[in-house]
Length: 80
Image 1 (cartoon, rainbow, N blue to C red):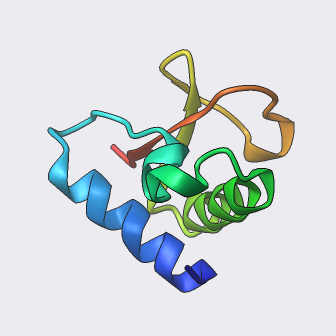
Image 2: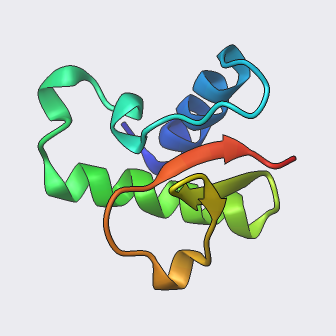
């Protein structure tokens, strides 16, 4: 998948969720690619781009966080 495809897939998955419900970035990738650290970083970068545009929030423990300071597991949700 390309970066553009990751962006499209993130938005597609979020549109399928109930309002305010997040997705895990790993859901963007096919099952066989979910342990690939390079691809996961590409998904996270696509998410950071969407966050910069104001389309989504990157969260940890249910709270929006600054993408520059994240460490550990994150979730993605549509901006409220």
